[in-house]
Image (cartoon, rainbow, N blue to C red; front, side, top):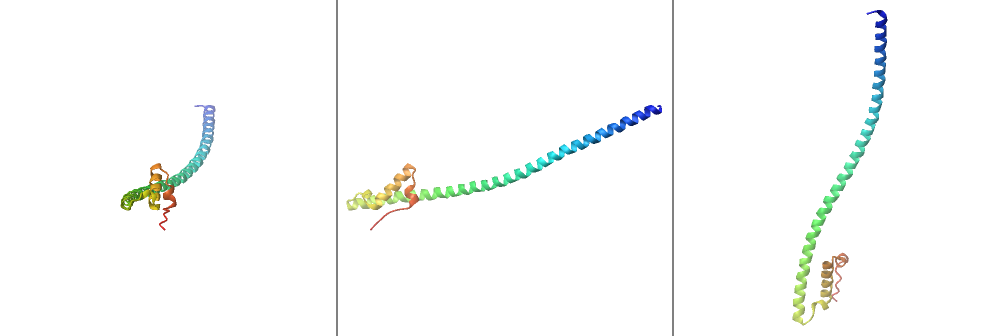
Length: 131
């Protein structure tokens, strides 16, 4: 090979390397930006997951409380019915109408609230004056 051809090939190979190096630098810069976005996304997602864990725990706690409330409500309603039966029996023995007594009126109000889905009587508590 003549010296001129060698010199041309040598120059061409140096130019290719230079271009390749600059492309590597540009590619590295683009990846650096992506890494920054990925890191930011990862930290935001991690914070989101933590909040979701707290929300999950709250939902489980509420579910447990709702189950306990259901049990208490069932017990309360059974007792209400028993008290109503006993009150009606005793009032009948005395020749009275149970719903005309303060206790009977309050039990009727509570029973009606339960049937209508309005729990105001339960929320405010029993208001029976037996004086």
